[in-house]
Amino acid sequence: MAKGRPAAADLLVLAVGIGLLAWFARRQLRLRDPLLDVRLFRNRPFTAAALVTLMAVLAAGAALYLVSLWLQYVHGYSPFEAGLRTLP
Image (cartoon, rainbow, N blue to C red; front, side):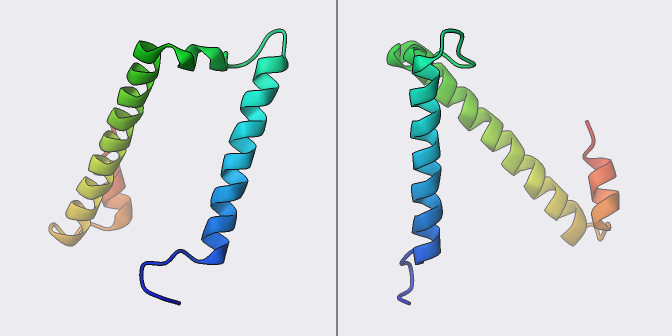
């Protein structure tokens, strides 16, 4: 396999994920009382706020992951000790 090319299994997982997301959105559009009104995403400010919130949560998770690695590799803590030190 060429370097940088996705494997067939990766593409299959991506296709299944997109299919499940489309199925969920379609089902929510048809329900009388949906879990998530997907029509809200037509509103640009709502979509922008949702994406910014998603990016903030991903950044916080990445920072917490990197802090735990730093505690383990630089300070020599065990994974358990690093986890205890990163508890909120």
